[in-house]
Length: 459
Image (cartoon, rainbow, N blue to C red; front, side):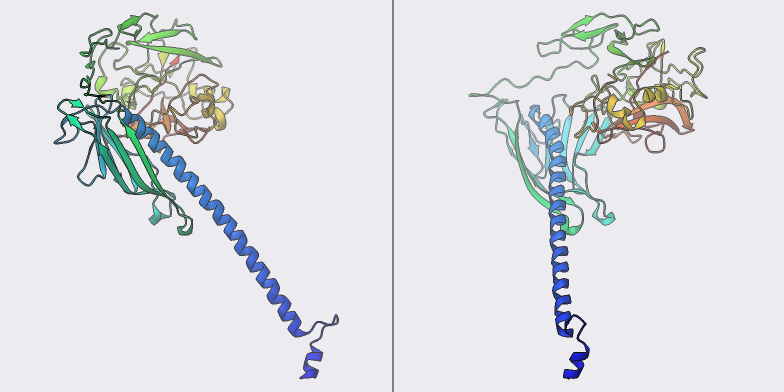
């Protein structure tokens, strides 16, 4: 045995046992270092997950708070059995119903792990998520909401309110990634409505009636309607007259079109309207109000209305080639004012309207930021790269799908071109809340039966 160990001695005098011990100690150190590194990475992932939960929930909370603070008294308009109440919940407390400041019924409900908002507005309908939902079965990360509960304090006395109505909302939220990196949080928020009475109550709220009204008409609540004007725009119940948008409009001046006033802005050699169209009429005055879709959350400037492609084109054929600014070939007026047209975006035509605009703003990788309004009122956070250095003032109006639902408000701004991609699609340019790029597309967002924003450019 002694002879055996002697033979295993190294030239430096280390025995076999000493070698084994050294290797074992080194292995322990490597494993310990790996575990420490893993713990650090796990901590970072947990921190990122928590930030994702907070950021995503913050947007939902802000949007819900704005609606709920302006909620008004309703009877059975939005919930069966309600009497002079502002807020109503389902029997299990998991759904909330109320009427918003525009008189639209709002319904919040938990569905497939996300908070959804349901709204009905005239013939329009919207059902969309307020939080980005995860799909664990497909390993798609996101936010999962559980145990959503609403607690309402709303004490009606006859037609008056004895105290301020409020809603307390509680939920469990977690960011889903790998199972060991799920970050869980409990969230509670209380929001009060401004529609309440002080000591002894107050006069019930009055809902202005201005549908179809002209500028200055009585709103049935002692005020004046900001209705339509033949020319100019309605300000404090009076029509402020400006010149009609036309071929002679001086870029930089304001002009009116079908009762709405638009700012104009120069980019390079181009002159654009600085707001998306809100018209409910064709250039000849024909009514298209049933096809000029207004998001239930509002369509005042700078949001604008949404139009399907055939309506935007006023039934005219698509551009069939590159635009010629001299002969005006392939300039399609559509529903734009006289002397203006739907932007061109024909394949391979660098001089067309959208390609020329994008080039003047530094290229597609940064032009989107230069075109977006620089705040989080009209775009969700983080509104990446937004500077509005072009004064294009694009808002994230989202879109109306072929199935009549409104989607992606404050997340995407999608603009029609007059250039056709195929029989059922036309080219669009899309801006996003989380990119500074602008995306030319037709496969995802270019279906002609969807409704998008229209921005006009001068001939």
